[in-house]
Every structure is written in structure tokens, then in C-alpha cells.
Length: 177
Image (cartoon, rainbow, N blue to C red):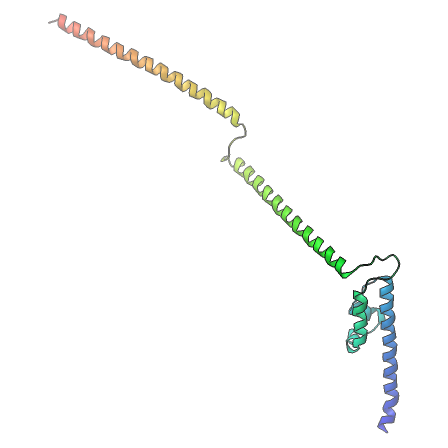
């Protein structure tokens, strides 16, 4: 008696499962035609079923994976292969590496410029008008040479004056004796 009561319930479950399977298959077909997202979650949402339903029916899950990896067949869609996607990825990674290197280079230049500016602003750095300072140094060096020459002349005059003074003192001392 229990088997007769369970028969309509089992048939109802089979019918419900068949309807859900049809909704999943329609959702997969629609996603392929429209070029939409083809994942277990997106198909389950579109079909109005739980993801666990897809995981219990491995054939439906396999259909989803096949549709996701197959190139789009609708009008206006370019043929995209796995190799072309990998080439695009490799190009993007290479461009990323080049941009990273360029950013690092620009950061180093900026750091150097900011460091030089801070060094100059602190007063420890070299002034910007180095040529003016070099001319001033040359002028001062020439002045030093002139003053040394004058000092030598005066030292000779002083030496001569002392010698004359000693001679006069000696003459005076001899005259008084």
C-alpha cells in the first residue's frame, strides 16, 4: 500500500526535475545566443533553480562548462579561441610589466628631483649661480696676490728702514763717544 501512495509523489518529482532541466537547457541556449555570462551561478539564476540542482545533474554542469569554453556562434561575435585569449593575456601581462618599469623609473626621477630640491632648500646644496661665484673667487684670488705683493714691498721697506735706523743709531753712538 505504501508503494501505491509513493508512486504519484515520485512521478511528481520526476516531472518537476524534467521541467527544471528544460529551464536550465533554455537558459544555457539563451546565454550562448546572447553572449552572456555562462557560469553555474548565472545559469542557475536565469533558470530559477538552485546551484545544487546543477551539481546533482552532472550532465547539465558539463553542458554549462562546454558552453562556457565554446567560441560564441551568434552574429556579430568574433571567433575567440583559447590561444587568442592566452595571447591577449600574455600581451596584457607584458604591457603591465612595461608600465610597472616606467612607473618605477618616474618614481625614481621624482624622488631624485625632490631630494635635490630639499637639499637646495636646506642651504646645504650648491647655489644655482655657480659661474658668478667662480668669477668672484677669481677676483678675490687676484686681490690676494696684489695684497701679498704690497705686503712684500712694505716688508722690504720696513727692513730697509730698520737697517737705516740701525746705521743712524750706530753713527750717533760713535759720534758721542
